[in-house]
Amino acid sequence: MNIIILGPPGAGKDTQADRLANYFNLEVISTGEVLRKETDPRISSYIDKGNLIPDDLFDEIVSKYVKDKKNIVLDGTPRSKEQLKLSYCKDPDFVILITLSKDEIIKRLKIRGRTQNRADDRSEDIINKRVKTYEDNIKSIIEYYKKLDKLIVVNGYQTRKDVFKDILGKLNLKALDKIKKVISHLKNVKGLDNIYLLDKEVKKYIFKKEDKNNRGVLECLKRRYTIVLTHNSHFRNPKGKIVVKGKKNILFPGIPFPEVNEENVVSSSPNKKIHDYLVEKFNLKLKDEATLLIGFD
Image (cartoon, rainbow, N blue to C red; front, side):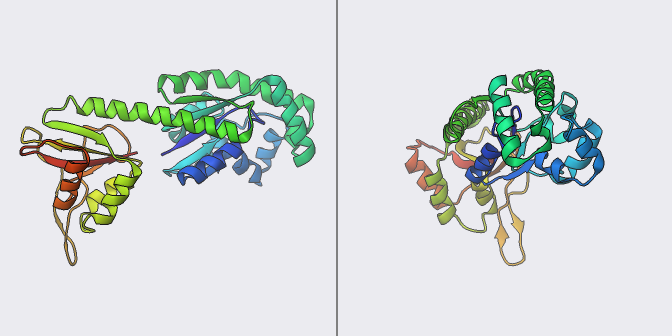
């Protein structure tokens, strides 16, 4: 899962990025911190004056830290419409926007300038310039992520604890919407039925009881979301090898499931014991159908 966190200077993005990373076991990449650590004199010449770093120079530096990483919180990027074209900004799972009034932004930055001695927070002229630059750029960024249905807006004029609580609540609603869309689509696929989302306790039980050679099921359980469904003889044949020969044992790998258009999708059939457990757990009325697990992020 990749999350982008945006907001004006002084909105508390770093704090919330750290909390999200701890909660979801993600890595934080703070572009502001990355840029401030750079020894390249070109960087400080832009930052200290409250200017945005040119997009090509920005990408040259930040891409070294982001590369093709998954499971990250990207803090403070994109900062311009052009940066929306960057590979790590194009299509995240969620985008969190923390909002603040202009007066509150200026108030917080003045305090930070005194306590943290940051050059870009000490001058009121530079603070006003940064705020204006943010306001000029954020509108097109908001529109882009709105169209992708990825945007979550949170009021930053709360305690840090309440901001985080608000973020988690809205993330859960977005996640539920995503799951509903996946399940709704699968219900229209011929040969599929009985589609349910697995909770943490069920996933934990299956992980403990499943044959360790059934690598596909274990991979499904490692994904952020795992669903169980049943399929009958009208459903298509598997899209990959369901059995491979290992060094010592026969292995059952995860195979693609193109009907789910999400990140890191994998599917696999559980063993007989887990099949029977799922039938009882979800009160499945089966004839000749088999159970299948699908995991995705």
